[in-house]
Length: 178
Image 1 (cartoon, rainbow, N blue to C red):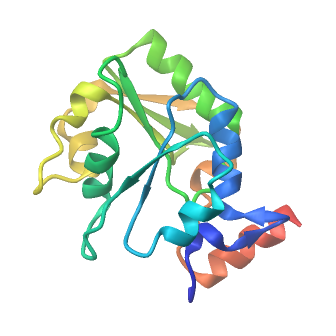
Image 2 (tube, helix red, strand yellow; image 1 turned 60 degrees about the vertical axis):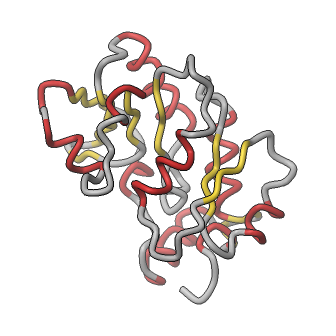
Image 3 (cartoon, rainbow, N blue to C red; image 1 turned 120 degrees about the horizontal axis):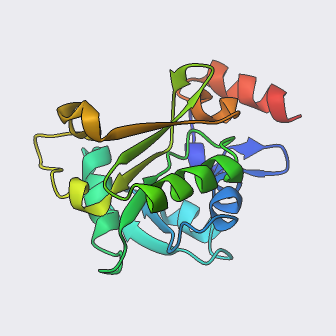
């Protein structure tokens, strides 16, 4: 899209600020933001936030590599990991809090939000399940490995499937928040 998705303006602030404000309003702490090559400008933009920065410096790096980089900075007593993608900036803090509450009730389950029968993002993984993340396995493989360990949590939040993978997606999000 010509620039870092995280820094694209959405309403009155960069996209990543929307995600961070929503996360900070939940019990999902600590918050680790994983940045890739060239992420220094994003790091600067989020300096006012109380977050930890992890780096996935591999220019060919994938989401699994980013998850591994973030996991390395979490404290040992962290039981669950909410993986929130910055390209889903309209997910509400209430949705993320509902996922955290579901994790508290069933800490061994992978928690996925649904809205109107469709599942979306973010996903909350038990930390122990993320140990299954190998160089050849992606998060989707882990979710599909054992459907019995997946819990779907209904929410009233279309933000769970509103992403910004294309310029048209981004423009649609801009229209929603203006």
